[in-house]
Image (cartoon, rainbow, N blue to C red; front, top):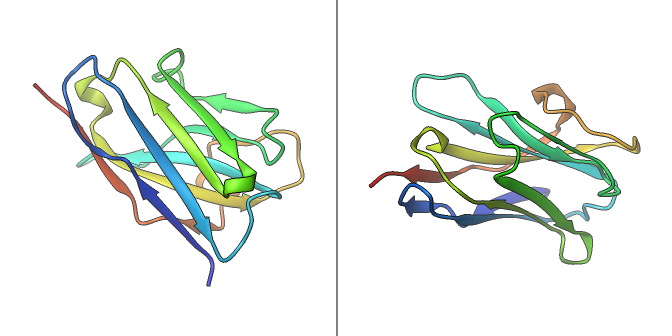
Amino acid sequence: QLRLVESGGGLVQPGGSLRLSCAASGFTLDYYAIGWFRQAPGKEREGVVCISSSGGSTNYADSVKGRFTISRDNAKTTVYLQMNSLKPEDTAVYYCAAGLSDQAMCARADDWYDYWGQGTQVTVSS
């Protein structure tokens, strides 16, 4: 069974940091682009960042540029999202998603992705 499991969410004060992990089981990530999405209460799901299957290309939403960093370790079948300088508006459930792709790019669009995790809550509050 193909699964993605997110971890690393929690409560953090404004200006703090968290690192989210997305671990794959049942398949390797070598040929998959990975995206991180988030959904805040009452808002539509937003594509935060993605990374191509090779890791050579990334695509960040303007709202997180310079603060968030995506990376991947295909040997460990894990993708990470390092989140620094967190703001209250970053509060949301964060999801990772995997999409089979041999392209040297990725997109922050839902329909690029075939498999989704269950999400991890990130709350930024003092």
